[in-house]
Length: 538
Image 1: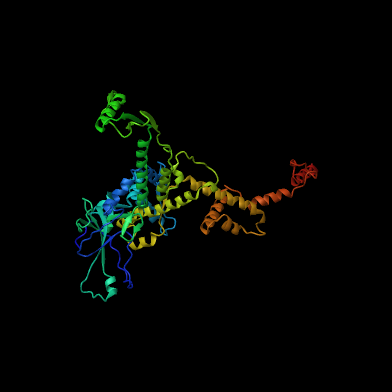
Image 2: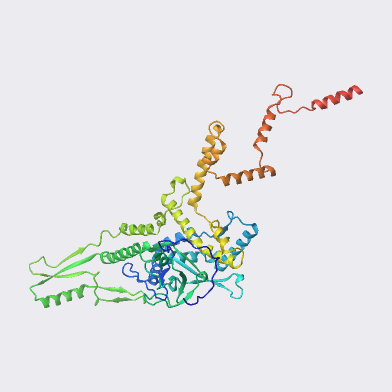
């Protein structure tokens, strides 16, 4: 393999792994080739798309359909929720067991990555590109003279011009019977870039080979295992979009042809020969036809009697013996106002894109009600959004990994230990989620109020906190710590001290015995004894 362009991050060598009878699973859409050979791929989807270049082009044509664009817009707006004040994503490091200094450096480098992406302003466009195309590529640009300076620029790459390749080094000396050695042959991964686009099915491996560490690659996670291809979330909506377009076009044609009422003129031609009968029919048509056309460009009215269309009246000859000249009216279409078929395919399109069909109705208002009123489709939609966020977070994780390793904040082995505990949180403004959580919390607290008199008899406090309020061990420890801190600061009153004060107040003399109720004595017992002593001394 020739020298690759870009940079590579070396990993410490680990011990050899045990042999396996299967090759490593390939779930990133990398096209497998044999060393020194060329590759070519063909895709036949609906008999039109031949390669990934045309497939991505079809995805981009689909969003030109207004219904498809509206559904994609709902998905993007629900996933990336910007409030114009903060970046839509933030780094969560509470579960990472490192020093606060390292956490601070991680947050700083993460903010640097967001600035390189200009994610605060371009988050909508970046996520929309990934969702429509099904894949997203960025070139990581660094200063070769100063790699410790980290990433200097991130450049977007059109997915039609780049593809990941997995090349297997073939050794002809390996015997066919030595299957273990044959299945564990060395493999090299790289990206193939061609500025003209990878649209030739048999163009070979022409292009620039780029090291995998120089490219950030995030795909949709939807794989066509038969063709070893990455598909977009729009793929299963291809048929629905085509059907909707055809039904709308046929509806327009039907309405244009059936909408007007047309008349049928039966002209009595007697016993005239065929040619003279046709000439007589044309004379009558020219005599009674009044075709005035309004020209919107000039504002004039023209006479276009020489033109005849299919939407005009019918003129039919009638031989002698008939009922003579007659004029009848042909009614227009009777079911022109029915749109049930169009609505059906619109709902089918939304279902194919995992968007609740209720969002299709523009006149439907959002009602703040009980959680039971939230449809199951909305709950399913929120789970779909959560999966999209999880998959799209790989973009930030890969960029953060490269930046931290180049800046020598952590090593590669340390990243392998930390990456499972690093989380990317998205700003959420889903009113459906908020409504659901609020209603659930209210129901739980009402149940706590009902069970409170039985605490210590049938239930324990720990049981109520774990089984009713559904607090985890971490939440219980954190909440107890916060309560102790607020008690020490005097923000809240200790329940034990409050109960003791109430008990001490109850031990005073009841009304009618001693001092009147609500009235304090002027002197205490000690003060009275001192006053008596003074008077005795005098």
